[in-house]
Image 1: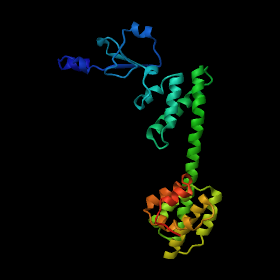
Image 2: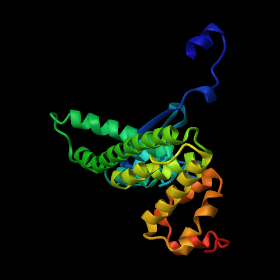
Image 3: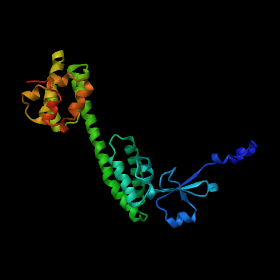
Image 4: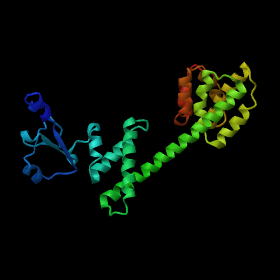
Length: 266
């Protein structure tokens, strides 16, 4: 910037000079006073301190930052309780949260780097961080493994239905998702029954009824007339809604499901 100003014979506007931001896990009152750092909480968050004007420098004292989503990334760089709280906030985010995924990937990289350097002496906080991240890492691996199993089962179901019934209807496609979440011991009888269907319009209808009936049976046991009466209105739902209902069966009681279809009668 200075070279460009000299080359163009212009002066540098102070407001355009870069600001240096220094991150520190902690900072004592004595240290802040020694640097002449002052806060400006009317315009900035607590935990931010500005050095004298011409130094163009600010300190971010991580342990003083408020616990808000906006400061989460910074608090992950803290130490001790501050960092642990930030990790807990990350893990509490929805599993499909992009912020959660990105943060966990960075934390796992940090964990891997720390473990790779275990031949060097790690301090207590670094060891505590490794221990805190270990269960999260295992949880992520288990989720990835389960996702792989479900994707494999989905391909098997799709191939079987296409082979037996030809082109899949949107309703059949919607039924594949809840089917693919079944454990293998429950899915296998499904596949054996589906493999006996004929490639016809009636075969497609039979497949749809069979899948919905048996998903209800797995969730609620033997079907009584009230539950059996739900099959037709369920199949009448838009495919996305149908898939959503059946995927959430484990979270619904019999009464809650029946209440969703007051017009259905035995």
